[in-house]
Every structure is written in C-alpha cells, then in structure tokens.
Length: 139
Image (tube, rainbow, N blue to C red):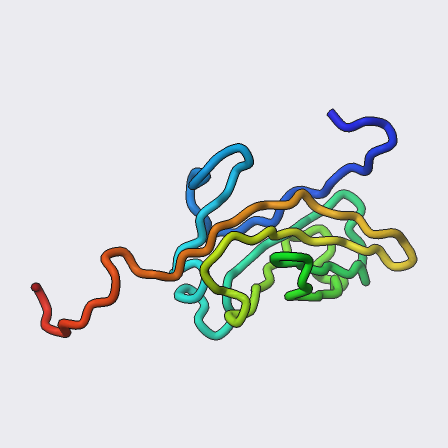
C-alpha cells in the first residue's frame, strides 16, 4: 500500500510477447525472445500497450522509456483513442541482448507527469539451439 504522500503509479507496460512467467524473481524479470523483440513486427520492433488510464484525455502525451531512461517512443492521444488501450512499438534499434527497465509516463495537457510501474525485462536474441549453418531440411 502506498503512503498518502507517494504518487499512484500507472499499470506497467503490456508486452504481448513477453514470457508467461518471470525468468527470474526478486525482482521479477520478464523474458523477451527474438520473436517478440524483432520477429513479430520486423519493420516496427517490439509491440507494447498502455492504457486506458483513469483520467485519459485528448492530447495526453505518453512517453516510453527503455533502459536507463532513454526515450524510445512518444505518442499524443487522439480523440478517438480516449478510453482505449494504445499500441506502440519499441523500435528495432533498441532491441539488443541484455536486461532493461521498461516504463512510461503520461503527461496530461497542462498537468504533471504520471509515471507507470517499472518492468524489468531480459532480451535474448539468440535462437534456441543457435544458428543453423546446414540449410538442408530435416537434419
């Protein structure tokens, strides 16, 4: 339970392709494989979703942070997106092996930043079994 002086956090990013269970715990770290990172949407990157949040409004600005606070996506809520779940992408250039923090901030028009929970993810871009140098089928 948060104290009366601490801000309420928005729900963490939804990453549809992340592992079903954490790959390690304390803290929870979620797995992101090559398909989720680069394969499912090769031109766009890794799909993420956020919202709706309680006071979601036209012109809210959503910013996704990756790693050590690097901004990887900024989106402004359109009128037809109010009250819906937004879908965005972390661009492919940010998808490298390693562990990263993933979060977002919503800034209402004329308001103050509303941060989300921070999710820890481990990106692993190697395919199971490694690279296959033999192009023959069925080996």
